[in-house]
Image (cartoon, rainbow, N blue to C red; front, side):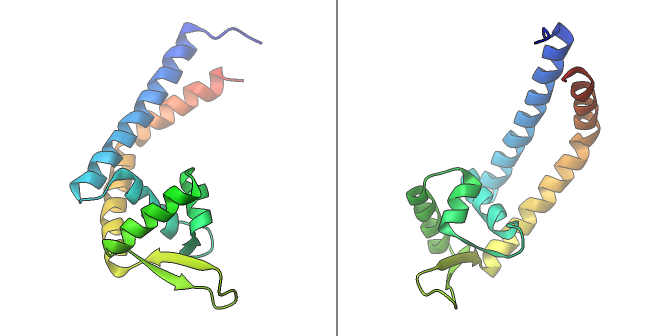
Length: 138
C-alpha cells in the first residue's frame, strides 16, 4: 500500500470540510422551515425513491440508515404535522406506503431549490477537489 502524502491528506480534509459545510447548510435550511434535519431527509428519500413517489417504512429505514422502529416514529411525526399520508397497498393489504402530502411536497420543493442553489455555488470547489482526489487516490 502506498503512503499517503501531505497533499493527499490536505485534499481529503478539504473535501470532507466541503461536505460538512453542505450538510451544515442543509441542517440549518431544514430548521429554518420548522423541520428537523432527519425529517427533511425523510421527505427527500420518499420523493426521490427510484421509480415511485411512495415508500414503505422498511424502505425509508434503509434509505435513512435507521432502525425500523425509528422510521415508524419519524413517519408518525411527519404525518401528525401534515407532511405525509399513509396509503394501503392495493395488492397486499398488509403493506403500507407513505407518500408526501401537498404540504410535504411544498416544503420539500422550497428546501430542494435552496439546496440546488447551494450546490451550484459549491460546484467549482467540489469539482476541483474531486479532480485532485481522483488523481492522487488510486
